[in-house]
Each structure stands twice: as structure tokens, then as C-alpha cells.
Length: 115
Image (cartoon, rainbow, N blue to C red; front, side):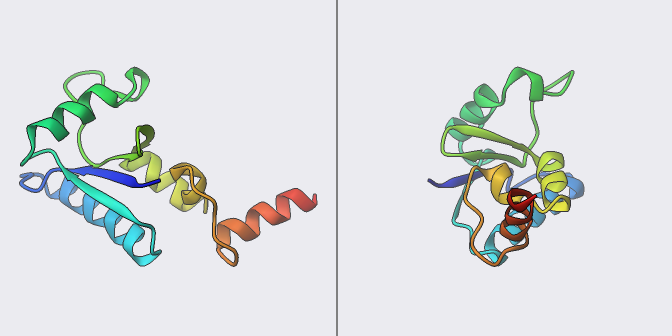
């Protein structure tokens, strides 16, 4: 399973750039394998991302903005959903991955199971 992060390499928005760097930096730091899919340089990536973000996760107006995160074909969420999962120590679950032993998320899951 490969995590795919849809980004825009030539975004004029500093907010979008920071969010993209935040997601990819976190994944890299945690040795989570991911593929960067540029929607600015590749029309197929842009089209695929826009078609595969679920209706209930789309903005009220306009198109979904990067970063958008998928596990292969399964939609995980946008930056806000990623941020919330990170705050809750639930990024692996958010990504549809098994938390590695010793991670905060694995420890939290083990505690829940013991209760």
C-alpha cells in the first residue's frame, strides 16, 4: 500500500505550500513510504484527485485544494483531517496503516484494548 499525497508544486499560496511540506515532512520523518503526485505539472493527477475526493469532503464552492491524501485509491483526507489525526496520535489509522510497535499510536491502542 502506497500513500499518495496530491500536491501543487507551483502553488502561489504560502498556506498550501506549508501544509504540503508539513504532511510530507511528517511522513518522511516517520519513515512512512509515500508518493508525491503533482497536480500542477500533471493534468491526469489533477483530474484523478478532483474526481476521487468524496462529495462530503469537497469545499462548498470550487475544487478540492491540495494537499489531499490517499492510500492507493482510498481517500484518507485533506490537511485538516491529517492535522486532527496527528493531534490525536492517530495518523496511522487515518492513513489506513498499522501503527508500528513502540509508536505513541500503538501504545494508545494497546491501552484501549486493555480497558
